[in-house]
Length: 377
Image (tube, rainbow, N blue to C red; front, top):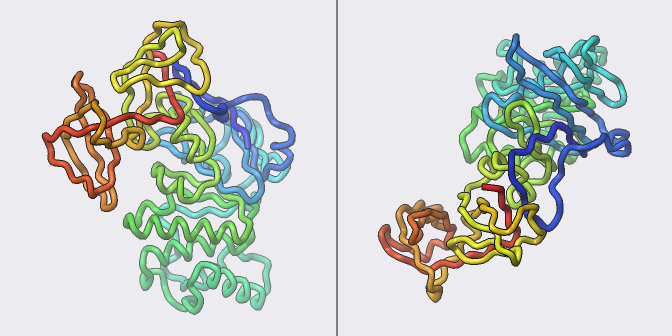
């Protein structure tokens, strides 16, 4: 997969291997792609919401557009579905251009399935009729067989005679998924599909839906603002901000090798600590000396901001460096401590919960950062 329109904020990143960024179209990747979104632009009036955005998704992959409200991710999904026209660029589905600045193939002709945030089930139809709604052209026997097949696939075998109001939220979501999968679409789109569910059910269902899609070999694009939902479901994630993709990559790379300040702040938790680049290429900061895996493109003496994650701070009673506990959040197996350093600066530390320290207590810490991420101050 590749992406374009990468919008990098000022700064540099030290990492052991480069993060994915925009570039020329990879011909091999484009040829293998089910969906290719090529430099698309869209605006509502004078307000541009998608600004020359590109990406592609290979067959059988689950991709995610992740970002805060208002970043343009749902507009991209609606453009792929055919609900929004393009001002520029094109969308190619399985080798056919379905959207461009001068043409728009109707949504029902795109062989795209869609799962909406509110499920959009027909309340007057039973589950079987809802699931079979899109199976036009099939005989009654073929329709019944396919409905039974997908209901069994989503764990709702025998529920065909029930009505939506008789089902829980999680079961309604499964019906919506079954309905989208029934016509065997080339591409499945999921628009914030779990946002109406409680946290525990959301996490469990996202893993189950991923397993279902993988078992079917379905190519899918998920849109969400919830990074944990994205991590649970997607093979690859594009972090969106202000109409562009800041970075595309795996959850691991987005967390450990963020390519911009926005990605560093949006993914996971952490703080940016002030430091200075030394002649030796090491970075000096209050926590000690750090050596980036790759040299920074900055002169010696340059001020930098270093990303420090909670898992980079190690609780160590033998360490001479002490920090004061100013806040603690119990998380079962772990406690997330907010610690104040001698300078007054703060860091976060994720510590096994049997190290139960009181607010105001001073504890020993040391820093261990495998992938040093730094931006010009």
